[in-house]
Length: 63
Ligand code: SF4
Image (cartoon, rainbow, N blue to C red; front, top):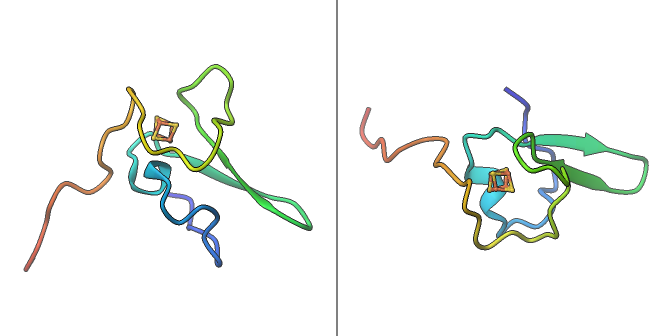
């Protein structure tokens, strides 16, 4: 699993909570979110709606 970077780029993006899972590609100045499912790889961020979204961690509270 790819560790989310700090600071998280586009914190409101659905991608962070997606089971795709997205990969974080860091350059010297920015962090990009690479989606393994979309043909264009880099969707315009922040993604607020995505047909391919699946939650990475279904509600799991109290262990
Ligand atoms: S499937 Fe959609 S929500 Fe999931 S990482 Fe790709 S673009 Fe983001």
